Length: 370
Image (cartoon, rainbow, N blue to C red; front, side, top):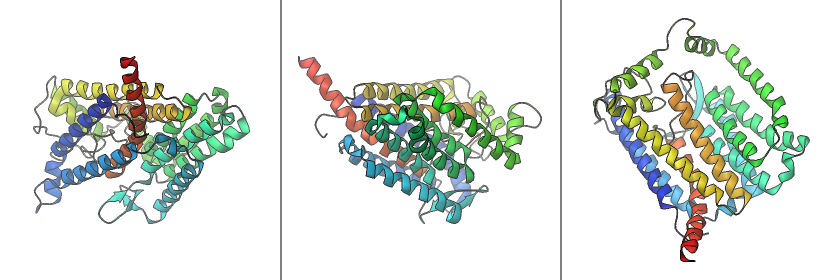
């Protein structure tokens, strides 16, 4: 589907968000980059992130030129699922250990996080499956084998890394496909109980998770990251300290350019900056849903709506953690936080949506002309 132009409001809003993210990564990382590499100029992480963005935009453009129907392919979805599962297992063996977790595979010039690919593979697999075999949603046996088992495999292996937040994101994305596809709620109930038991077991196996939950519930101690995050957001006031004038970047708040970049937004741009950022996300997601609703086939609708739902889920969790509404968990702010794997995979995921929007805008022009 090369005819028609992509939805410009959606694309422009996305590019503004990406530019904003680059600016905040530059601001948040300049001091720490200088400390980590005294011989550098403080631009190292920013330039690396800019390279990822450039590669991502290129990948998004190429994918947007491909008819999105071509992704509705059984063999393709199985290959992507297989690659994702193999990489998730491989990372447990040869993965790079950071903060006692193996979540990345070293590529030499950078690290790759397989769980990011698994998000895309999971949504694409279920979307294609449901559009091709809708009976899986009404037959409990088929539903369990073809829908739930793949979710358990991807999420289970990811949780072992350990990365409960990544497992939660993968599971959420695939759940959105099933929910929007019309799966019966009673089919979910046994597996919701199983998931609850699994999470409880993983928390018991890692005492630090219990401690983090107790701190969140106010049962003693305090969380340093959350304390610093709230200080940053609170000190920003209405209009913020000014771009580049934040204090938390001076090594007070770890992972400021990653999981806690929203705190940097609050400190430097204040409540106004936070609301503008949230408004930008809301506009992109709502516009994405509009594009989904214009799809003439189930695959286009489910893929676009589920991807937008996952985007919204990740935004909510990231901001909720930074503002102490949820316990601390490592979930990046889409298109804003630093990170190569997440950034490039997100761009690729948006590609089919832009391709679908070409038909969306073509139909709008026909209505105006008639």
